[in-house]
Length: 373
Image 1 (cartoon, rainbow, N blue to C red):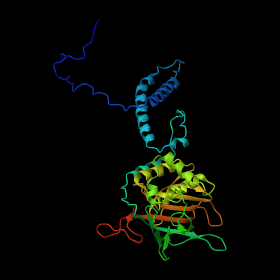
Image 2 (image 1 turned 30 degrees about the vertical axis):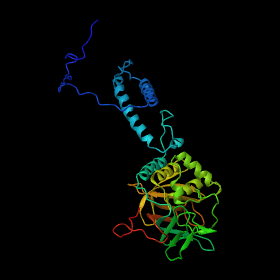
Image 3 (image 1 turned 180 degrees about the vertical axis):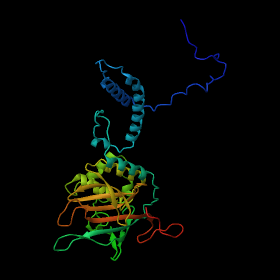
């Protein structure tokens, strides 16, 4: 039997094989794929190669199928492209494939995540990388924002957006002590006092009397430490939010979207919980992208939004850092309140910090207020 030696050097002499610098370079490494991806791509390559019909000559005979020599290169390109697509798909929020489309001629199992899910996936990654707020149970979360909301006349007709005003909120971390709401030009409002308390139903909302549930905090009535205890699995988190907001309105998807927005805006969530909240929002049907949106202080960004009951709620994010900037509510269609696109509510989150008591304004080590977040 004839054999071909692997090397001209004697085995065991301790020397490595010499590399001829004038010879061909070794082929570049090709990213590996999971077995199911590899099988799908191989089937597609073979299907496309078999479907190509060689051209005919003027005499009616078939020309040699020279394109068949391009198939290995095509397969390599598809393998590399598939590996990149697999990596990108792994960064999409769980459940994004539920709204996937099927590419023309491609396998039905390859999802294309909606734009909102992709954007929320990037926002979640940015949220997970934020610095964690050092908060003790006996402290307060301080949130400073700018906000404005529309008001209509008693006779009806178009609404008018009020001037933007400073808004400051102090929330007891564990809910055991009264908080405080301070709005420019108004008297202070005590939050969570003994007996019936004043409840904030959203950023910029007017407090209303409310009796806390005896069972304690929930997604519908959260404290900062309750938010910090939420699960970080998006599916489990969305299920919990749906369960705990079940008595608020008839649209469970909008209830969940609104509740998540409230947890993210005028409250505090640690990085992993904040990321999970964004990923949970990506699982809610009907969430879309608004390419251009401006918060209450004029910061322009991109937004995710959901429309319900004639209004569209927008969460606005910085285009570069994907930081949460604020919220905006606009009319989804024309009506008595005004034309479609009329802004009926806007806010901008400027500062979040931990302080020791209500009314305390946080300061940085150099004595200045903390930078807007």
